[in-house]
Amino acid sequence: MERLTLPPGGAAAVDEYLEYRRIVGEDDGGKLFTPEEYEEYKRKVLPMRLQNRLYVSWRSPTGIDCKLVGPETLCFCTHRYKQHKTDFEMMPQQRPISLPCRVTGCQCKAYLYVPLNGTQPIRCRCEHFADQHGAAPGFTCSACSKCSGFHSCFTCACGQPAYTHETVVETKEERLAQGKPVGQDVPYAAMGGLTGFSSLAEGYMRLDDSGIGAPSVGFLDSPVTAMDHPFLKAFQASSGSLQEKPTDEGTSSQVSSLRRPEEDDMTFFERRYQERIKMEKAAKQKGKARLSSTTKPS
Ligand SMILES: [Zn+2]
Ligand SMILES: [Zn+2]
Ligand SMILES: [Zn+2]
Ligand SMILES: [Zn+2]
Ligand SMILES: [Zn+2]
Image 1 (cartoon, rainbow, N blue to C red):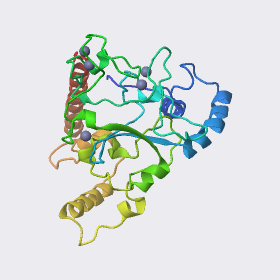
Image 2: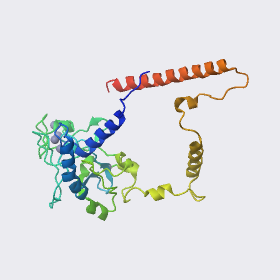
Image 3: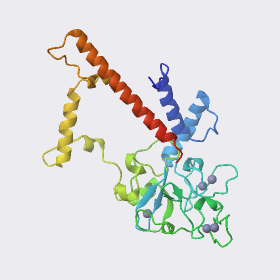
């Protein structure tokens, strides 16, 4: 069986590491903190992070946040949002708030989102790609001399050209004042504009630009009534019946475990064994197909 196995407690260790990464981000400079350093870091950084969170989005002239910037979102300088300065002991007073890149030698003075065209960088009006331009203010092209600074007419999914959009950095209060979602307070580093599961979708798919965040758990858990959409009612019914089935049988629950009346013990076990082998083979093949599709060069 090709299966990922973890030593006892391994899954918990992975969870702990992921939690550490979400909290520390790049702040350990690539060398894991000792448990003492980690505690000290949390004591120092978490209160100010919860207090002084900045929200970063890429806003169209119509006011829609077409992109909510998250820790991994690339900047014009080709580095990720989490590699920029995102924590502030004191909230900066000047506007706009500039979030400079922390990568050694990078000239980027303020995080700047640039959309991609599918997986490709977008082109400047000088016809060279975004990443062929310098990250220092002025954004001049390194591939030609006719460029007067990066400027792209690429059309965003919202219908407006990229150059009419703005990378906006704002505080919780500033967002609330505009009725923009702020989500829950989180201890994680470089969360930027992420406020919920739907945040990674493009603005026009999210359609929550005027909302103030995800509905409360109480609202989501409220019983479905006769007034609700038929889809909701159907979903409620099917998820209810699912819960009545035993859930501890693993893969074998999908094998027809009822003995047919004409079968003797040996035929019954043989049939279940064959069914199981077939399922394991199918699962293995699925795994392989997934592997080969991810290793193909894009
Ligand atoms: Zn940079
Ligand atoms: Zn940058
Ligand atoms: Zn250019
Ligand atoms: Zn150029
Ligand atoms: Zn847009």
